[in-house]
Picture 1: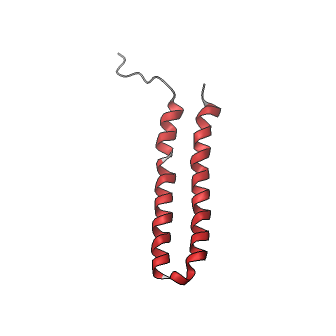
Picture 2: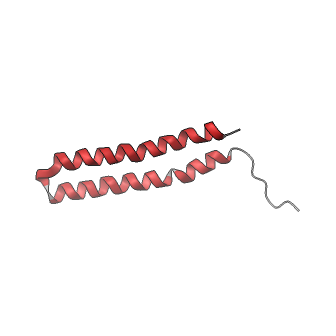
Picture 3: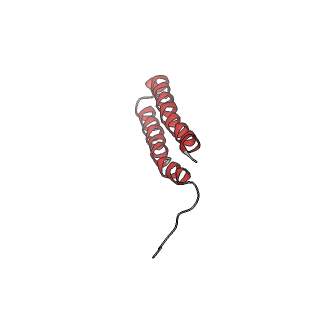
Length: 74
């Protein structure tokens, strides 16, 4: 007996689940960055620089995840 049948691209479902990680990571990066700037306003430039670097790395993971379903999909 067949209970359920999944049709469509499972890669899209996988990417949707994988996008949760970078989303949470970016939220943590900016939340802690703003908190650090509030505590030490004189270090705002350094904090912002490191915050944007972390954002770029986390966003790169999400963009790689966008491409993977197309590369490995049928």
